[in-house]
Length: 219
Image 1 (spheres, one colour):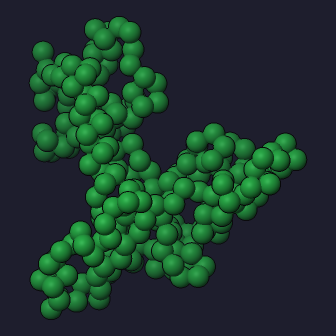
Image 2 (cartoon, rainbow, N blue to C red):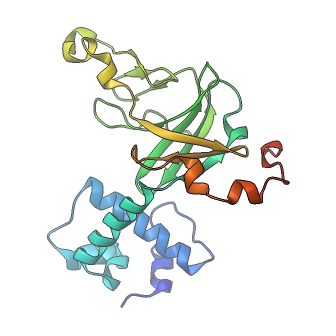
């Protein structure tokens, strides 16, 4: 039978056991969404539930519905991703992970903060694995496709094999994500049609006007 204690005993590989029971559920559900997104649902649910005990408290349709709702919610709102101090200098980047989405936050050579989906336009591999640091470009580990800090395609090895790419490089830029800045914080929104950050925050900036949040930083 499903229980939090059983979930704690069989945490996904390499994941430490959270103290809070709700966080245990979040970790399991996140891992499950990632798995079914990549592999799909197995035919043998009974065997599958032995490895994924979180499925025992909800059916396949319910989990699918929750996953779809979660994705819809996350992709339509402004999410806090990092602070400006994380991407202080040109080339500084920070990887923001939410559900099965990996987003690169990076400050370009022009000083502008941008965000991109962390996914190669060729085979979908992550173009950046380290959680944060400083880079001059983003390179796919499989075939060496390379992008500039502004998301434009920089180089393709054996480019003569990809005339459809070299002839239209704008189509193969890293998919960009909207960025909003306030008070030294960086927010992202994966919905290109969502209202601007200013509308989303409402009265919050006015409530914090005496706190000078933009003067604070992390080390």
